[in-house]
Image 1 (cartoon, rainbow, N blue to C red):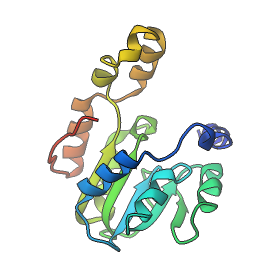
Image 2: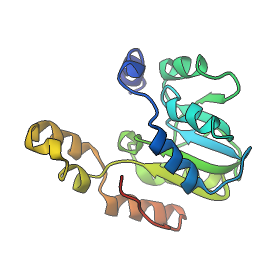
Image 3: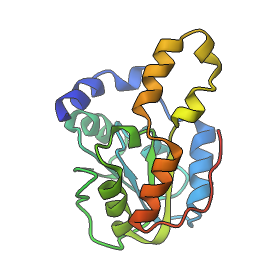
Length: 180
């Protein structure tokens, strides 16, 4: 699986960058003060990690892909970049004031141990996830033009009810959902 992400990492940034509105909303939902320690799980090439650092946070980024992290390291030397698996986060318990995970949970083989690890490293802070659900994707306007592509993409995404269930089983209390 790591080889897949290393291959994707070679050209990842040619089609992706951090969106300022998504960054603003992530920061708002974290509900932390400046200089708070925040972990970006499955950070990829670090686009959102860097964008959140630019809002005044002390960021750490963690990803399974060496290639993605190599790209990330060129974007910021003040961020702690760490290779690791989401099911065994290489951080102490209660270490972070917040955790983010942006457009990545559909890549996790098993949500429960991944969420349990995020819960473990949080020190009474918030986990903020930005993702899509099959229910949401089936309503995209692009569905009219690319029904097979959207259907195939939607199959990869965990349902909102599954995500909620696994978050609660991991120990999180769900505060709410925001549609984007």
